[in-house]
Length: 405
Image (tube, rainbow, N blue to C red; front, top):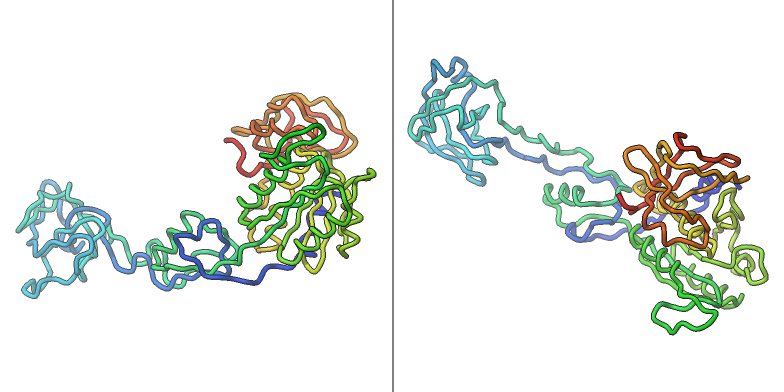
């Protein structure tokens, strides 16, 4: 199946998570907002000074200049956080000023702030050497956020700015989507966990580590397992994972060899395949299945093939589960600086590095079993079938989440 069609089908078969919880705003980074959040108060909710200076009425200083300063009576001083009320004895404020500091509420009746550099810094009386228009150096209520505005759309992931916005509204808790849950099942009798003794014929399960960390970065709670090439063991792990998890990812055993048991196991647990094989390399055996609205992504056991296809699909899986578009891969154009003369009959994802609109091929080895050179890459070149790369060509590039800058 054409990979873009496979990706589209994901949204048609996954059920959106509709459970929520409340968490402290201070612990909400990375969580997904459950529904639109509207401001219940304006920010700021009062007029405040943007400068250290003097609050005045613009009409009182309309004729002021360096040569003909206007003198005003200073009736009080207001610092940030002070009660904005004027002294009872202040009387008519015409022809008066209030010494004011940045962030202080501008008292009622004054409509502009003259910065102190344009005055003689008088204490009882102040001379004004400029004639600013109304609302100069004056932050109006709602200048940043107006009451009733949608400040964060439902489905957006909370970052530091979003958390700061919520705090500016006085919110201590926020309604977020229940954390998605995922399981990674690495299949292969040759796999052992890091820390175990390495013996002949065995290898450490590194791919499951990459996928676990990738999923955690995407906001999932993750469990990971290693299964021998045994139909019953793999089937039981998939079936049990589907009880609690929203997403199951398997690696290995998905091709057509004698020990490629995952397709049989998917049939055994009653999963329905929505695509089986995609028109891209590496990773062409990749299979997508669904059971009871839960998605199973079965990846190659070759590390680069699995990682590239995971990166291609995961943002759309997250969108299907959560309505969050924040992890959908960014695609852009760039000019390639290196040749890639190999012509393949299928579409290719080629590891690469992009900077300032230019894309390079820092990796010499492009085997699907090699992934350590991805540490020098931050994107994939999406190369159409039957084409080669020549320096100077414009290519489509897909950015890798968390790749080097």
